[in-house]
Amino acid sequence: MELDFKINDFEGPLDLLLHLIKESKMDIMNIEIELITRQYMEFLDTQGKMNLEISSEYLVLASELLVIKSKMLLPNIKTLIEDEEEFDPREELVNRLIEYQAYKDITKVLQEKELLRKDIYTKSPENIKNYVDDVHEIQADVSLDDLVNALKKYYQRKLESRPLRTKVTVNEISVSSRRSDIKNILKNKKRISFFELFPVVSKDYIVATFLAVLEMAKSRELIIKQERAFEDIVCEVIEGA
Image (cartoon, rainbow, N blue to C red; front, top):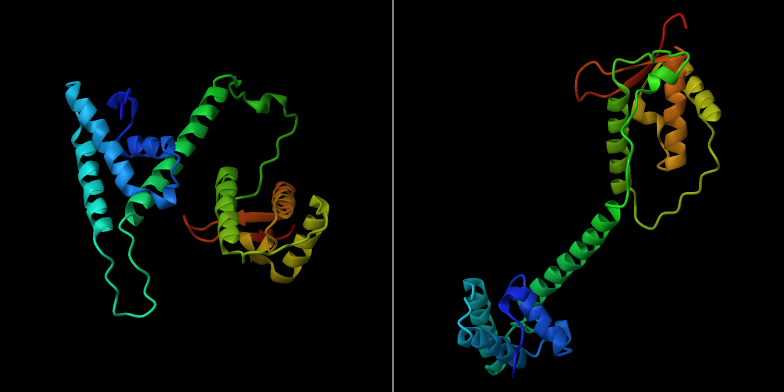
């Protein structure tokens, strides 16, 4: 079998093995180990005859293939345990090849996105305060960035804990309706966890609620507090408001 490609064409022994499997049109889940081992060894032999340096990792995989081949040639030994599946010596190698192929596919997608990104040009951020006529300070002991980051983490935790195969239908939510709801809640509780205002895990609901809280803080209808770092963020009614 003549091999007309060099070892430098491949990123490693798994890349070479994957190439040989595809060229032979084999099913990766059912590798013909005797044939693929012969092709792999012929490849290494060709590199040796061409006085090309062969990395030790290629030789390690060669030895693994020979071990698997020898195990495949041994007669099957029936297990004494009933219904136990017979071990396939190729299983570990197949899993490594599948994982490697997945990484290659992801790398290809990322490279394509990188090329597309080179054609995108962005404008440096500007100070928008010059375009705002009336700036009202939000009544909060935490910054807006702190609130946004906390809300992102909370939303992610809620998504991860949500049961599978659920379908939630929510009517259109407005900022004004959520603002009214929050006012009613604070009339009774006076103080409530910021995250308790987001019982529904949907982007529309969360955005409307978040904007309602900011509007209420801006108009001094409530204050947002966090007494110490990493503690719960709470919303309180401002006394005398």
